[in-house]
Structures are given as C-alpha cells and as structure tokens.
Length: 234
Image (tube, rainbow, N blue to C red; front, side, top):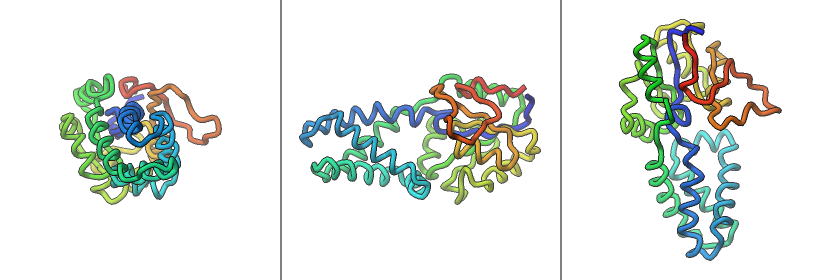
C-alpha cells in the first residue's frame, strides 16, 4: 500500500528497549542477592511480579514513564519488602539497573536502514513517542535519529501522548498529509495501534517476538510485521 507519511514509534520499534530489560535485571539481581541473603532467582521473580502489577495500571503507567528511576525505585522497594530483606538498597539497585539498561539499548536490526530508505523515497516522517522529554531526547540524540524525521513528538514535551488522539492529530497537521495516506508503525497494541486507528490512520503492529495477537483481545491491526523493515509502504 502506498503512503505519503509515516508515524513511527521509538521504543521497541526503532530501538530495543523492553527486550533488554530482563537480562539487565538478572545481572543486577545476581550481584545483590548474596548481600541481601536471598536467592537471585527469587529476587528477580519478585521484581518481575511487582513490575507487572505496577505497569498494568494506566495511571501508574503514565506516572511511571514520566520518571522511570522513581518507578523502578518503587518497584524494587516493594519487592524487597515482600521478601523481607533490607530495603535500603532499593535506590542503588534502581540506579544501577537504569545505567546498565541505558547502555544496553541499541537499534533494532534494519531499523536505521529502513528510516534512511523511507527518507530517500520522499516520505514525510514523524517520530511519536511516549515518555519523559529528557530520556527520550537522549536516545534520539545518541543514535542520531533526529535527522530522519520531519517532526518529533515526545509525550513529556507535548503534555499528552499515545493513545490520546491529540498527538496523532498534531502529527498529521505538522506533516500536512491526509489521514488516508498516513501509516503508524509501533509495537504497542494499546498505545500505537488503538490510538492511530481511532483517528483513521492505517496501523501496523510490530510483533517482534512473534507471539501473535492475544486471543481475547479486540484490537486488530491493519497489518502485522516482525520488524519495522518489513513494513510495506509502496
């Protein structure tokens, strides 16, 4: 299908983000468990379970992504309380994890090449990402992504983010392209796909893990790909 413009998500669409989380937590837990007097696997499981509950709540999710370090401190602190071990190391563990995770972030295979190809094709491109301004801008600058896009929209700068229709409408106005000629590409069914489809934008879901659509889910992307490089635009 031919499009004139592409709206592109950042985390886990262009850059590996959630996919680097678990290995980093394993390393952090392996280092701290002996001092805390618990098994590393037990510590990791507790953090994973608390994190799952934390991020499942929409209000906490919005608050947490605006201050990831604070969210991680809360998550680790609650996990340590459940294990009845010293909570004093929660801040240090959260900071250690945050530094290591940032270092582990990297472009997904074919992502940079795909953005460059789309630019060469003359497509209008907008990056539309949730999260705090400082953290998202650091990633954009670190990997030299800014020059690929005609516009960049960060939740922390706009005051609203996906799936709020306002951020999609803002991107459409800035790119000055018809909604019928626009495609959104992202990994989140809730934020990217639902948000885009609500305003009539063709939505392509990046299912990097190949897990497929949830059986009980009502969201139906217009297309499903394993990576941004598979997105057909012509």
